[in-house]
Amino acid sequence: MQLNTEFMRQTLIDVLAGVPVTLKLTFVTLLLSAPPAFWIALGKTEGGKNRGKISGVYVSVVRGTPVVVQILFLYSLLPTMLNYLIKNVFRLDFNIFNIDAVWYAYIIFILNTTAVLSEVFRSALLAVDGGQLEAALSIGLSRRQAYMRIIIPQALMSALPNICNTTVSLLKNSSLAFMMTVKDITAIAKVKAAYGYNYIEAYLVILLMYVILCSVVQGIFRLLENAVSVRRRAAV
Image (cartoon, one colour):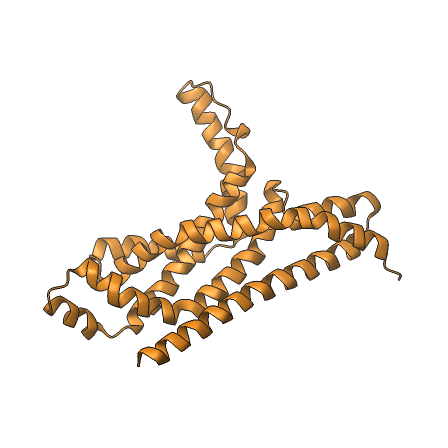
């Protein structure tokens, strides 16, 4: 078997156009998932029983179902159901199928990442000694001030490795956006491969791109961890 190196070279160039889409899907999702994930983590560590139970059910359902199944439900099945309700029940002149597919991708990845990050934040919050919160409250700080100045900075330090793992997993899972016709790295390479059935070459290009992107992300987080370690040693 001989690889078509010219096809691989051209596909690699074409695939670069999908890199911004992949990175945007990853980091916008991560940014929007962080606040609700932290709220859920707080609910499970010190919130009321009802809030903790609801959060627990949400996390269990999302983490217990494959991302592919979530895509099939939220992108394929749910819009059809909503379209029926809009047209036949509410009698509205709105075509839900005109919504850009990328919005479905964001919703699905945000729901999934929120559940994963909530467990990351929960374990990080539990790693901080509870006596520090009590000490902060005893010297007159409000609960919000204690979290912002003392608890969250320490929790984020211990959460960095797991946040890195979550980011890398999200970056790889974003390749499933091609199922929703989003023109990311995977979608572009698969379309190129379909013309001449050069799937092996296309998949090798996809493999190379994700290895590079994931390595860059891990490198950035490694620098962050080193900077945090240096700052922690200087503070001691």
